Length: 388
Image 1 (cartoon, rainbow, N blue to C red):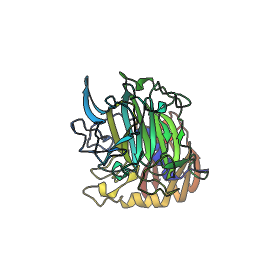
Image 2: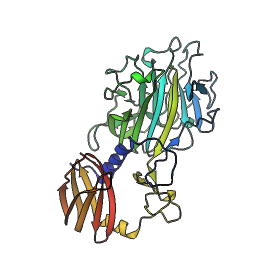
Image 3: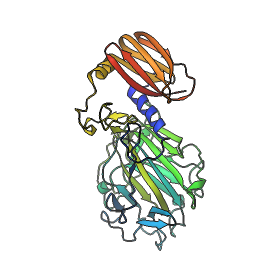
Image 4: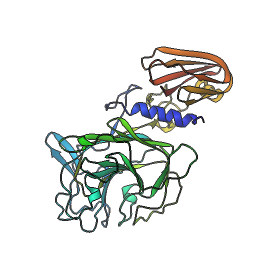
C-alpha cells in the first residue's frame, strides 16, 4: 500500500531534522531556528510558563516546586520536590509553555534526575517525569491530575516500572492512538514501552536528551539521543487515566495541535534545555522567511509576498504528484515528467523521464535524505524523501 504523499514527505523531513544541531536564528534557508522554551534569563519562569499543582489555582505553587536555578555551570529549570515533607494528597504538578501551541514540530529536552523522592510517593514515580504534548496547563481543572495529552515518559536508570528498561515511552492521559497510518483499532493501553535505548545518562551528573517529532494528527516519533525509540499514528482524545478535568473528552477526536508541558510526579528533575523547532512556516522559496526544512506551509509566515507559491511551481504540483514507499515512487497525473535525484551534497545521483502515471524504483548509492526535482511542461518543484 502506498503511503499518502503528504504523510511520507512530512515524516521524511522530520527524520532528517531530528539530527540537526541546535543553531541560533539565521537568515539562510537551511539554518534551523530552535525556540528556547526554557529562557534561562527568565528567573521567575512566569514569562513563558504557567504552573498547575493539583488542588491549587493556576500559578499557585506553595512549595516552589518549579524554579529557576543555577547548578554548577548550568542554569536549569528545576523540578524540586526535595523540600516536600511527604507526598500526601498527590500534588501532581505541571509547568506548561503558554506562548502558543504547535502542530508540526520537533521538541527535545536535556534532563537529569538528581535526588530521592519525598516519602509516601509511589514507587512507579521513582525517576519519572514526562514531556506532555496536548492540553494547555491553563485549561486544566483545579483538581485535574494530568493534562489531556500524549506523554513522552522520561525514566531514570533506577526506575523498574517499565517492562524493558526503556525511556521515551508513551503514556496517554485522556488520549489514545493507532499503531498504523490507516485502518486498525484504537490503542487504549495507558503506557506503551518504547525500544530499549540506554537511559543511564538520565542520572546526575550526566544529561540525557529525549524528544519527539510531531506531524500533527498523522505520525509522532519519540527519540532518545537522536535515535528513534517509538512510532505511533493518529492521536485522538479518549477517556481514561485522567481525573478532575473540566474540559470534556470526546472519544476519537483527532488531536491536531499541542501545548508543551513538563511534570512533577515526585522525582526531582532538572532540565538544562527545552527547545522546539517549528516545522510549519513559509515554504515560498523566494520569500525572505523561507526555510528549506519546513514541512507545512503557513502563508501568514511569509513577508514581502502573498505567501503563495509561484504559478509554475503550483501548476507543476497540480499536474504531477509523487507518493513513496521506501525507494519506490509512484508518479500520478498526466504528461511527460523528468525526475532528478540529488544527494545532500547537491550531486545528481539518478534521473528518469517518462509519461505519467508511472512508477520508478530509485537506485540509491548512499542511504539518507535526498531531493527529488520534478520537471514538467508546466514548471518544476522539489520534494524531499529518505531513501535506503
